[in-house]
Picture 1 (cartoon, rainbow, N blue to C red):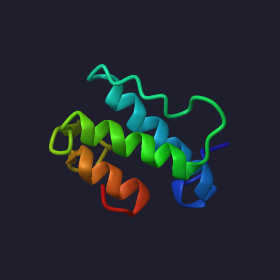
Picture 2 (picture 1 turned 90 degrees about the vertical axis):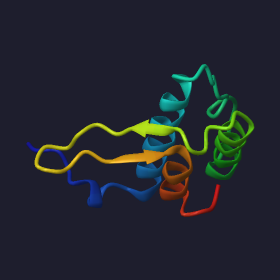
Picture 3 (picture 1 turned 180 degrees about the vertical axis):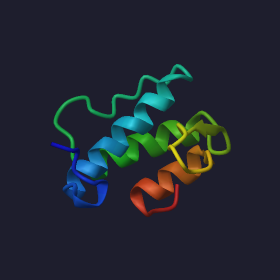
Picture 4 (picture 1 turned 45 degrees about the horizontal axis):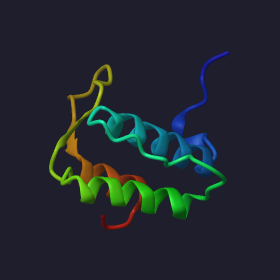
Length: 90
């Protein structure tokens, strides 16, 4: 059985996967974001990620995006990654 296309994934699961992805990337800079510490909702995790990016001046640092077969490798910064994930300004 093949994997379900991303467009068919539950939007809440897609958001959670994006938050995990962003938190893992931030950990490369020593940012151990307590993003998922305790019982949280998306709004709280968003504020925690926003705070870590801004307080450490990482807005314009490039996030490594893995290449997708058949597509050109994309590069975006943490500001763009945050805004794409949440549809909200950093």
